[in-house]
Structures are given as structure tokens and as C-alpha cells.
Length: 402
Image (cartoon, rainbow, N blue to C red; front, side):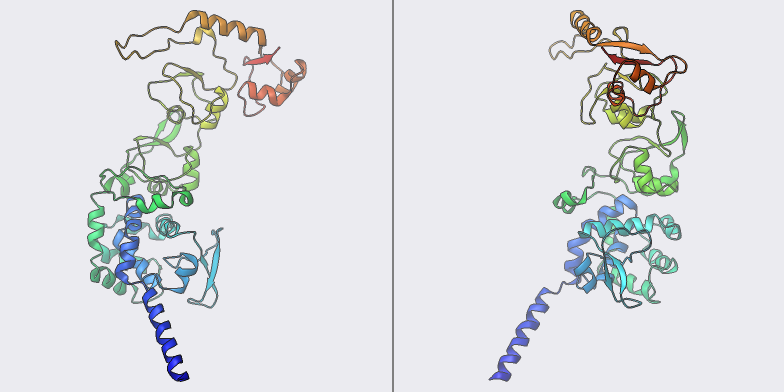
């Protein structure tokens, strides 16, 4: 009886383990949307990504993927600062990257290939050329197994994965997987409209030009910011910082993107806001850091600014009464235009003169001396005038509280 009971126990245990084992088809169905979205973001063929995922994770059943969400066997490397796990591979106890979810793993895999020079030649291949990609990965040193290309090709052909690549060449799928984990991912994605892959994987068509005195490119909507940064050999984090962006992805609107850090001050003193223009767009069109634009005008990034508003593009520039342009008021019935009430303007001017005075900076004066002269806290003076440093210029006008 004891023998029968033990046998029964192991049969049950085997069935439980077997039931939990993921099939190759189930793995592909689960993660194909991630592979497709990454192809559109970074240009790695979806068939290659999925086949690598199948091999590296044993269709999602490997010990490594279960404890680390690492779907591509990417080791820590010197630049890795995230969490890690230790796993036996070519050597005992090797360090592997650990991710919060599969989203991060798939994204890191794309970035890993996109940002390393020895993989760059792969992106000149036709996305449908899965054999070229398979042998190219081996040539670039992705895997140590000498049969890696053949195994990758067989996985793609047995599961018709190149069909997914072909579909991806013409459209963007539903990003439902990303939306489900949006709170963790911090990534922003474009709409679900149809776009061509060649807009994304061919940044070589872009030509760097001088715009606002800075090196920049004009990129069409749908292009990958990672691809642009890689093409110009700029670290992605730096490229995003240059353009006041937090996350990468596909461009929602055609725009100028800078290849170097923007200025702290604009070329002009003032700027008149156009209809439906955001503060970010104003900063980009003037080659000005968004934080500076906000500081000079006492604004928040989320603020909506009406068309016709005059904004300062330099520190210490005061918007005077004569600078106030006509404000357009939309009238749904007849779309007539009217000027801002002159009485309100006079009232605003009177209130200003009661509370403040204007000081014009003279030769030899510093911000510290001016603050001391008027018995004002220097930090309060900087905040009032939208200054982000103690730097001032001769002739610059400063607002001083009375």
C-alpha cells in the first residue's frame, strides 16, 4: 500500500508539473505583441525576437526566466545598474539581468542590439531576411553555440514566425500588453493607426542641419527616437535629455529634434504663442530648454497658454504694457476678434507699480549686490525674475519688490 501511495503521489506531482509547462505555441501567443511593438520601435524583426525568446527561455519554462523575467539571457555587463540574479551558464554562477516584467526584458533586448556597434550591420538587412539575421547574430557573437543560426532558423520556420514580421511591416498592433502594465513601464506609445516600418528603421534618410543655431534633424511622425539616437551615435538618455523627453518610443508628430543640448536662453527676447501650441512645442521651436521657458514665465509644464500670449525667452525680460499683443477671443457665432479690455490692462499696470519697481543692471553690479541694496533675499529675487542662476547682464531689467 505504501508503494502504491508513493507511486500515486509522484504521478500526481508529474501531472501538476507537466500541466504547468508552457508550450512553444502558448509562449508565442503570449509574447508576440511585445515582439511586434519592439520591431516597430527599434527595428529588430519580430520573428527573430520571438525565436530568440523561445530558445533562451525553453518556451518560457527555464529556471532563469522564472526567477528574473530575463527572456534573452542577457548578462549583467559593466553598465548594468539594475537588479540581478546568478545562474549557471557558460560558467558557474554568472550574473544575469533581472526585470520587473517581460516588457522590460523585450525592450532591453531591442536596445541591446540597437546600441552596440557590432550589431549595427544587422539593421541594414531586409527585416524579412531571417536567415541573414540568424547568421549575423552568430557572427556578432550573440551566442556561443555553433549551431545557433540553424536552431533559430528552424524555430522560425516550424512556427511560421516570419508571417508575424510580414504583418508588422504594414501595421501597428494593439498595445494592450503595454497598457495593462503601464503603471510599471513608464513608457508612452503612439496611437494604433497604420504606419510603415520604413519610417522607423531608416534614420539614414535624415540629414543633420543647423536649426536655431543648433545641430538638429527634422523627423517625421512614426520614427523611432532610439533609431535616430543610434544613427547619430548619441546615448539614448542624452538624446532624450537634449529634447526634454522622459521616455522614448515613436514620434507622435513631425518635429525638430536636437542633437545637442538646447540653450538656457532663446535667441529672441519674446515669443507670441500660436493657436493650439504647447509649451513643449514653443521650447523646441526656439531651441530653448523647457525648464528655462517655464521659469522665465512662472508656468507649469501642464499649463495651457492662450494664442496671442507673449512669453519671455530670456531671464529678466519683462513683458510691458506695450508688449502685450491683441488677444484673440473665439466667438462661436461669428468668430469676431476683440482687443483685451484696456481698463483691465491699466488696472494690472497700477497693481504692478504699487508692488514692484524696475532695476536696470549697471556695470560692476552682481545679483548679490542688488539683493543687498534692496534688502531682498537673493533666492526670492531669482524666483521673481525667473532666473535659474546668479548670472545677469548689463542693461538687464530686474523686478524688485517694494
